[in-house]
Amino acid sequence: LLVVILALVLGLTLGQKAPTFKATFIAKCKAFNASMVHEDDCEKLWGVFEQAYVGRDPCEVPMEAYDPLIAAVPFKLECKRMMFWSKSKDVVHEFTKKGDCFLTLENTLLGSVLDGLTWCGKKGSSETFTTSCPGWDDCVNNPVRSFWNRVSAAFADAACGDVSAMLNGSIATPFNPTSVFASIEVKRFKYPRVKSLNVVLVTQANSVTNCTNASLKDLQKELDQGITYNCKEVSEARLEECSSNKTIPCGACW
Ligand code: N1C
Image (cartoon, rainbow, N blue to C red; front, top):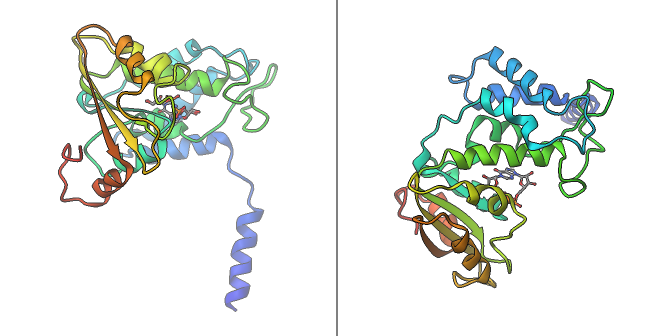
């Protein structure tokens, strides 16, 4: 009997049509913060979002196409606790799950709804496609890349005080000029709104990089005059300890 039930459930699950991109967007929007977002707000937001790319050539969507979306969702967050990252997505989100220490873009409505998704439009169509869309590097003005560029710019514009950034110490160039962090976010940090940039360089046993890395010198040169720069090497093991051990207070990990 168990086998039959299992087979039935599995068959049903597999047989189900994948939810449309719109349905995923709305469901993730509603799930984000039920108390903050009204149900019809998510429907409205979808309308503003799809305007950016629907009916357009998927290589001709500039970041400005998302200006109305950004205007519709102002960042109402504590600017002092913002965390940026580059090539360290998994470890940073594992760490911010701990709770109230830091906020990443994925802790905001737009970041959480669109994280992990792919979408594009087509000339002469009013549909949203999720397959055969241009990849990140296939063309500069693709819908996904332009979205992250635009929303990251807005996120960086909202930062204030002491800003943190988790960078990857296991690669030769933790501050890569082509990354969103380097090409968009750092350029938007302005003194005196932003007082300091505190780099957490995540290291592993086989790490190739430390805080003296040449690309981090470039980062310091890029910073608006007046912003204090700090860098600290923190092992991935230590970060994991901090995420799992709730007795380590916020801010005491490094
Ligand atoms: O290019 P990156 O890193 O430097 O971008 C990370 C940087 C962070 O500080 C975020 O604020 O830019 C923001 N950001 C995201 O929050 C984000 N979530 C998911 C940028 N990109 C984001 N993604 C996806 O990760 C996006 O689709 C793109 O492909 C990667 C970029 O990650 P990266 O190169 O490690």
